[in-house]
Length: 352
Image (cartoon, rainbow, N blue to C red):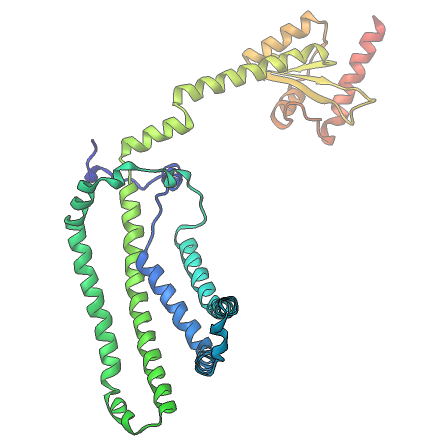
């Protein structure tokens, strides 16, 4: 087995895709918690006055409610059902923003994906021995220490915030209840904001660590990269054989068009270009076959076998061979020169 020291290569796109299909994606529970808490604090700050007023009204309504509703079980059930529905509707904005924040941060970290393999039932998760081993493992101890450090970090932030406001807390005994509740709400909001900031800092560090760890776990050895490239792209000898077969098939198709040509222009021994022209269907003569050296001789042999005229025009043949692609019409600049050759061919045919 390859050691971690040998895995020096960055994971390929294929390996990353395969990991995502298996449900392996970078996650940060700390960032998720920080964003969720921050969203809840923001929603509470915006909707707090309205929610507080609603709570006051519900308490007053409950204390002054008509007790006759309790005399009839059906009326009482309908009354309680309506109260539950009203409560759920009031809580719906808070639940909605929490859900949107959770989904949004998960998509931002890992992206949208569907992984059936991640939903597969794994019996080893029910193994109590494995659970105990993980509970008392070094990783669990490290998580415990980090949790304590996070609590200390956030506690220090809140302490420095409240330390400068101890004098304000001491004056609450002389303040009216409404103002005292407002001041306490402000202190709670200030402390909550600092807790959110602290958790965002922790979340950012945690997210960076998990993304780094995710890439580190997926790193590959040089041999793994070569093997994957061979498996996905094909072995070099296989690709070479496929290209050779494709080239041979293309050459056979091209040579099959030589008998349809009207003329073959030659260099005479290095280049051969076969042209075909049908005035009713073509705007200009088309190159149906071309080749050099060995292919040139094949084109000439086929042309002789089928009685296709072979005309020696060295400069024209070289220019057509170099500038016109197979199956394409000749350029306008060469039309006059080719037309003269075709006219010569037609005259030769009539003279026969």
